Image 1 (cartoon, rainbow, N blue to C red):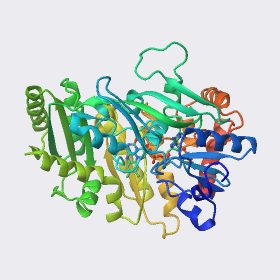
Image 2 (spheres, helix red, strand yellow):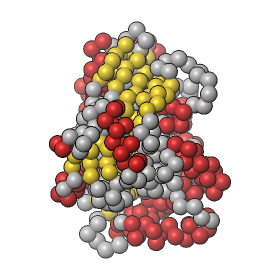
Image 3 (cartoon, rainbow, N blue to C red):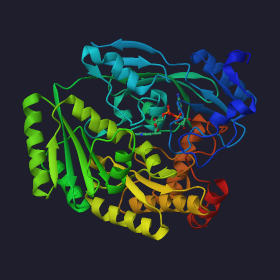
Image 4 (cartoon, helix red, strand yellow):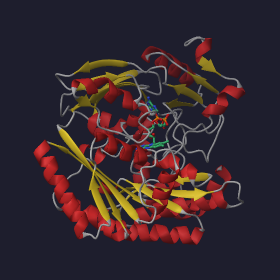
Length: 470
Ligand SMILES: Cc1cc2nc3c(=O)[nH]c(=O)nc-3n(C[C@H](O)[C@H](O)[C@H](O)COP(=O)(O)OP(=O)(O)OC[C@H]3O[C@@H](n4cnc5c(N)ncnc54)[C@H](O)[C@@H]3O)c2cc1C
């Protein structure tokens, strides 16, 4: 309180309830307090105090994370960045913007659209999530297929280290700095290396033209093949999204229905952008590719209003699950695109084995799957079966040469699944790097990495641990 003032600290039990978890609601813990610093100096002063007193702490943006990264495990102080929400500078000449970490993602594009610019990374949560949280998670989004994920758009950052020292990383646009790429290391480190207090991002010129195409398939495999065919044709769409039948049922039952037929097996939502003539050609070619793959219907949006309606329907897809199921668990795996039909088949088998419906909404172009496991927490055993199904989906992704997360991070949820893709030695090397920055392991402790131990023993423990945690 001495640092930020009494009105910027929450410590009563009833006030802390809202901070028990992030968007991964299956795991909850109680924080010791929440503090709301107003600037870098206050963050540094709070961190120095916590470090001196050996009190663990966690940075938190909007709390939309889906893997428990901002969730307390018990007794941590949450350093909330939501009051640091200013757009500090826009430099159109050098195409950069400087923001505080609590600045909401979508606001940046809204602020610069009038000048013909935008910020490319567009997580579906962009109307709520913060750019600080995006950097910590290396967030992706529908339009990251062509433009890259957050790390490709971050040019510099100011960071408060876990001992309270302040450093700057990157050099705001100067390419190829000598020394280690610490900015790259920080991006995606899930709040375990430092608290980001200022970010310099790249902004892009709004493309001259874009077209949005919607294609309905009676066969998931044909839809999956169309995805590969589009990329093989040399087209890199700005976005290439897929939804399966269960997902279509959900989005059509929720707040933004657009009249998708409910009996198709899959739909593709594709956007191409660039120079007008090229965009027209690419849209035509995509329509042809879909026809060759026996599409039931394929159409190009008549105008921006229709395209926006299709996108709103897609972007609210996770929340739409609430319309068809009391609870759902979002998974996030990555696979080589060519394995899509095989992986979707295996996910259907997991659904049959566990008796739980699984919807699929995903960034098909870059092979980033989001199986959504539907369950009812009130029914005994369903939550545990959902967690088991989630872990099995990630194993399938790892087994075909993919990864256990594309954009939602590891957090608490997938710590043990890190062993699906890393050896003990590889995990140990990463832990040594964490220790250089976070030597007392006070910043976001017990996240991201599994406990040390032999693989076989720990794998045996996974199920028990998960059941105990929830
Ligand atoms: C409906 C829905 C849709 C989503 N869609 C997408 C999507 O398309 N793509 C995608 O990538 N993600 C998506 N997400 C996940 C989530 O929105 C992202 O991970 C986002 O980047 C989290 O931002 P946040 O501000 O909410 O961070 P939080 O949830 O508050 O924190 C996330 C992690 O970042 C750390 N952190 C936060 N701020 C800082 C900081 N300033 N310095 C250091 N560490 C920090 C926290 O400690 C935590 O580990 C979605 C979530 C929801 C609920």
